Image (cartoon, rainbow, N blue to C red):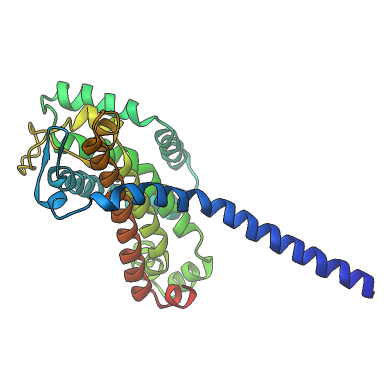
Length: 286
């Protein structure tokens, strides 16, 4: 018995050690990316990045920052309601049946479509077909198409992971299915919904290919005109300026990459803190 207990103890220690090593290996690339980008970007970061637009191969990033916020915000405004309500339908009303299966299958296919194909589709249908030209709305719709399946699937998984006891108790008290969804199930499913939206925000901030075909590029500040006016965005600066043979261009590209990472980190922290306050059970877990 003692030998068996020793073997279990050593086996437990070995597995714990392997888990720690796996965690370190998984986290190391992220730390290395942050170091490589931060060490090159921080020395060149100054107030001019937020007060000056891109000027030739140098300047600031004001137009790109505002353009990125505009594109991502519009994309989320379009994709979030469709994705959340679509996910609720799949989880609560369309688990079986041909229509629910068709929607689920179409969502999975859309999630696998390359981003450049979505960009080309937006160029053909919106920029050229509808005559919108390069514009913020065309770019936002392209980002919404990319974000929609992730929000929908995250919402579906969030609702389907809830115990059936909640549904049965609500229905037993006389509540209808819609009331059960929005008065009983909505709050415990909120963390999963927020996760899907955060994933969509991260995807929108990091995309370049679909925006080149739909939003174009502009060194001017966004005018608020959603159609017929191209906008700048941070990923274009990274993609273009890193290939220029100028130190100022490289510094601007690294600064844009660093700002993207900071934006995504801040959004994740702020939203998760907000959700934790709204959901006491999540706050106790985190």
